[in-house]
Amino acid sequence: MTRRRTGAEAVTAKGWIGAHQWLLARRICQSAILALFLLGPLAGIWIVKGNLAYSLTLDTLPLTDPYVLLQSLLAGHRPERLGLIGALIVVVCYFLVGGRVYCAWVCPLNPVTDLAGWLRDRLGIKGSAHVARSSRYWILAMTLLLAILTGTIAWELVNPVSMLQRGLIFGLGAAWTVVLAIFLFDLFVMSRGWCGHLCPVGAFYSLLGKWSPLRITASKRAECNDCMDCFEVCPEPQVIRPALKGAGKGVGPAILSANCTNCGRCIDVCSKDVFTFGLRFNNPPESGVPPATSSATGSH
Image (tube, rainbow, N blue to C red):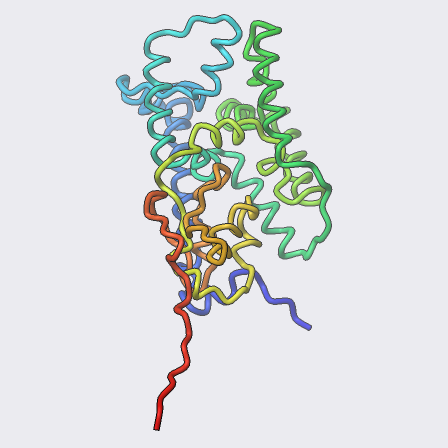
């Protein structure tokens, strides 16, 4: 029997572009960010100077990774004023749109792990090692403790995200080994293993955006036909069920979990257009609930 491909129903219903619009938007965003960083070193066009840890756009706008800044503070370093301003700007932005938007829309490692997930699906690779998703928070705590003990931002020396960006600018070198290892780990050992279970960067941003107003919502959950495609493509599938299937328990349709990356893939692959972007405040429990059926009775 021919195996149905994930998202095939959405492609039939909405066309290929319609079934990949948010994925394409993310790739454009990620590519544009990398291009802005690369233009300076490679072409001498310095729109953005620096890297994802700290950058200065048009010699005016500072942006600082608050996770790196926190490590620096714990290591006993006194950040400059622009560094603090840049961190505040990033914190406000990610608080509003969801902290883990960084993972889906900015992180250069995301296309690598997405490719591994796509290949797992195409090759029909089943089975996965089991590591608790909470492990990333323990690793996050360890990186912060490491900063305190060593007086350095030691994690950034081995952070695969930082290594990949530095490698793209200055030559990958040993970064190839780390990126390849994560790709093979996600492909053969654990589905969504790095981003979903181990990465402390994602863990940090999930805490930062825990109460952000922008959320994906299953506003038409009554239309769900249980194809399970949204669960297949979601990097954090555990966040979907409460919103999609919680009507009977009085749970609203908004995905409120801090680990939702707002990637929009569930919107793409749903042929019934169950999901959309919305606000956490617009989350009535009765939204998306199928209307009650009643039988008409009459007397003669």
